[in-house]
Length: 480
Image (cartoon, rainbow, N blue to C red; front, top):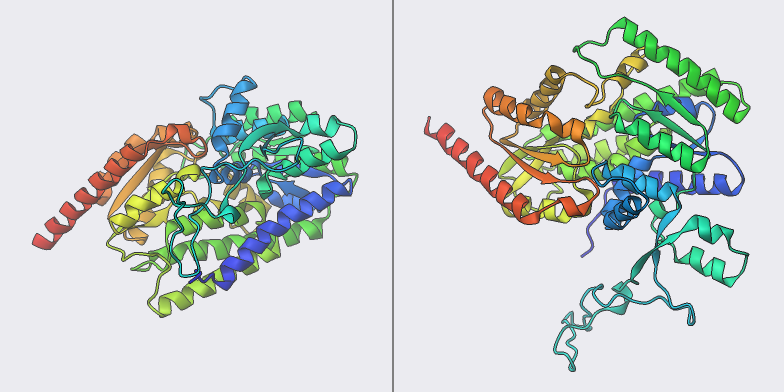
């Protein structure tokens, strides 16, 4: 029986599909399409009706589709060090024209199928069909896929029009992340990390397009000082002027206000969805939140995103009332997952948690996109508070608050090779969590995009150790 998908989830899928479709159509009409960092103020671009794509979101999708290693290696072949962010490497390879394509025979025009792919073929009674010649299960040809190779869009576009050009364009992987148009401009805000600055500078250089930059320095204090707000506000004003020059349009105050209204409504609905993890048992898993992040990144300033998250919140409210959950196992332990997930290895992350009854009921990455404000000064303050822009005291306070509210029994920390600013102070945070909250922590090595940096055996061992520590904690509390 097929898994039932809630109305809210269906609505969210459509939002992302529409964002990508509209960008492709705009490019085909000769309109500007930009690339933006995930925490650049999307409200500014929305005031000019610009179509914008998000390389971080794109890279996560490419990695989740198992293309991350190929694209990272392509970037390394271009001269980029394998020690830099995996998202950046994927994005820089894509900006250079690299695409993952399905391999085909030039003479026959047929795709060359990878025999290792596909699900077992089953007969009418549901039994696996065995190949008499090999004694092994036959593969269902409908589920098999072609070999994957790297091609270059820029080289293909330089070819004369004809069958070869059409075939090579058609062979590019059909996933939406491989169909994002090349940028006509880039928008960057380094409140995520300073890697963003060089990453987007390189995109602008490679594609010979303008870069609009907003600099938000690291904040050494818990509060954002007025001088810092003035600094960022001045950059908002400059960005508006640059967008006016780029588009040939005047800044539309009413469109900007509408975009801000939509962005706030989206953020509030998103944070409400995040808060449903506080219920015990939780009506869903934190991994579901990770899956919905594409919407809050790509469509924050769209009313459709706000409506879809509100619908999802209603779905979750019903789930709680019924005492149900979408998590496919009984919830025995609750943990916070610290950091960005390993997108290429999501099944590997989930499997040992499921085996031990561990539900992720707290995450830091997802609610970090819940920017809520009442005016443009508050907007500047809101964008100042990205996880890697705040001092360690603020970072600890946020996380410990989420742990308490979401009733966690332990913390699972991803030491992410691609995100050194985030991972750098995690050892101290782990110490604080144990000292302040009395919960055990376990860390594992991985990467948000490059599967070469993840070791499944190590991860499984760390999860097992965390479970044993949580169980010991539980028994000690019961003994008291």
